[in-house]
Image (cartoon, rainbow, N blue to C red; front, side, top):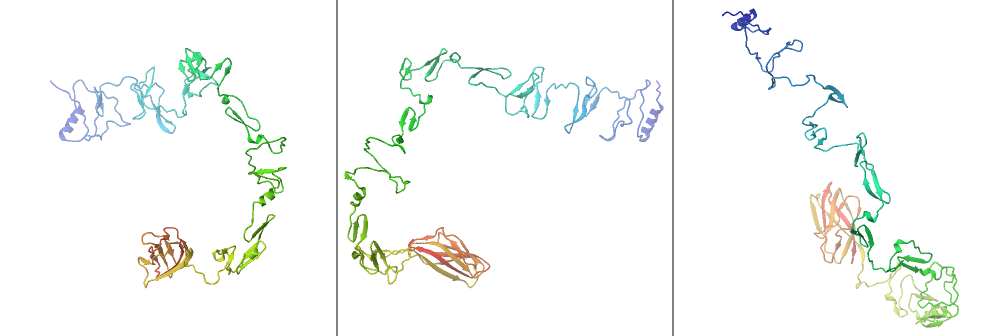
Length: 471
């Protein structure tokens, strides 16, 4: 048998035999005289192209076509035209189509937002459904299926019997036949009949006794009357008011008369014609009766309401007596007795001056004392120095301190070795400092001052303390 080979094939064999590289070949339709079976493999993976965008093969005939290991032996059914058109919607590139989209197994907007089970009768949404334009309210639809908020409906002085599909209410009044059997306390509903139970009130004909109706009536109290529940009381000011004139006889078995503090002294508040009996004492002149209750004593005389001193009973140097006035000399230099009382028992008042020698050794005197201390070092402080100030002799409190240094600043703190008062920063300028914390000492309690944390090399500190002794 003889075979006829095309010249191109002979040229190919010659090229392959002698190792020449031919960059491209033109393949024609196969002939009936010879069958060539050959694989076309690229020299490098994912590098060479079969045709270009401007130089393409007319047709490719194959029994199976594979794209990235996805092999097909037939084209998918339906139209081969791509139905989507790229478009920009709200600034975002999208694709749109005018044909029907069939989400056969559902539509996924994200990994958690799925639209599943869409049929001709229902749509199941497995996640939350958001309607941002609607607030918290019930929803209703109109005849076209448009969703809107339900505005609500109600009844005035009635109750809702029914609500339609559109949310409209049917209002009715409460009737006994609309109530089920129930016990409401004073009223019992039995087979649509309301009955008032026995409430311990007597019901005779049209009257009811022992029934509190104060909250259910429109009773009001008039002038000088007070209505409290079912009690109607007469106010205390009803008998006599300002400007009223009483006639006849009045009995006041427990009268307490009080003079008004707003009435002038020339106005008569309470006038009695005749006589008055007070605590069993009858009198016609009140002034005379009151004066009779007072009597004089040694050196004191009372006459017609006047009180006078008998100056002969006032004795001693520096004591002056004139009429009803008894005075002491301004110098306070006086002795003797005043109505039997020794003048040495009288205390001085503001402005008085003591002269001579006075013994206060047995007295406890509370006063301000001002103690000072000064401390100096040859070199500036480098830490904190604790200086004992001696024990407190009596109970005392420290209300303030004034300090100054020769240079820079240093911190000063007074205390009992455990409890410290307020910290003071002393400088070259005298400063006044108030002490309020832990500022008291008991008798014999130790006192200390801490000086430290210097700045700018001070070597001297001096303070004066305001102490209140016998506090």
